[in-house]
Length: 429
Image (cartoon, rainbow, N blue to C red; front, side, top):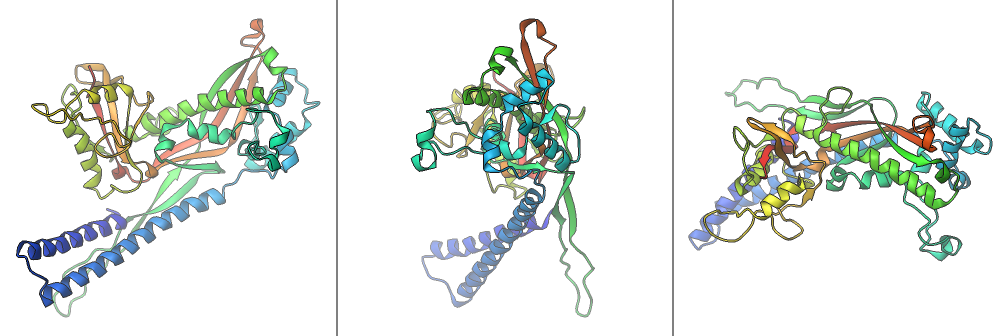
């Protein structure tokens, strides 16, 4: 057990003792005795100290993540003018025509990015500077609002990518612009206390340190663009191309974060991470009930991991099932899934078809759904470098359509497996 969780256990025990003292005096309708008052004050001091120590350790991890981000920058230092003039569509056209004349900026940006990353593109690199760039704010006249037409400006590519990822909405930690393999340190064990006789020394013990290792794995997606569309120079076309590429990549990354196998060049997702909590419906699966939902929370809480961005995540089939499932089958009309902002057991619940509904359990083949619960801050998504764009004008040449393939290096890791629990055999029919 890591030291932070040990401190949380100690804090919980002290809180229980302090509550017991309060319960005693309340039950006897009296005030604290001098001894009880002194003990209660001491308990409060210890609880406050543990709170501060726990917060300090959590901040140390946040600083480690921030250090990785700040020292893994793949930007090439493009200026404002170059960022404004850069065109993804123009670069694609240059690849199709085999001629970079008129697209010198895009060519130089790709070359500079390749030099920064230390590798050659399979097609051309889209500079990270431009992917994170936001154009002038059209809503503020002094910042360019008078100069642009309505709905012509788009959000940055990276923002589009992240916002389409449900796990990121739930609170996953995204590390962008990484260069090279990374290892984020974490404390995996602490010193041990021993009771000793007078004159004897306790056995030596020390903390243990581990690492959350991440290395790039390549995900690819493609979108088809007509040759006529490529001839356009509208900002709307730029936005359309960027949005399509973002959507296709986001789907793959989001799915891998939940169900990635960890084999065949895939990252390992939450469902296949060893050590997460498990709630089992039955030999052949079972319809999810209020008890299953509470058990998911309990699996995380018993490991003192019930902090941070706690939420459930499942698919529409499970949501539909829980909306017509009573908490107590024999009486009452309170459904498991309620109609509010925290509809499931008092927590937020995210719904996406990325959560599988075709899992197997016993004789129930291809019909079981997954339900996740946990602290989504402890899900790490690392993104290396920038987009590598390949252009294929041949596959659909008879229709004049250009296939644009986007490649991105990504990896996924769970900071603490104990932070998550899953039910993988929920039946909805």
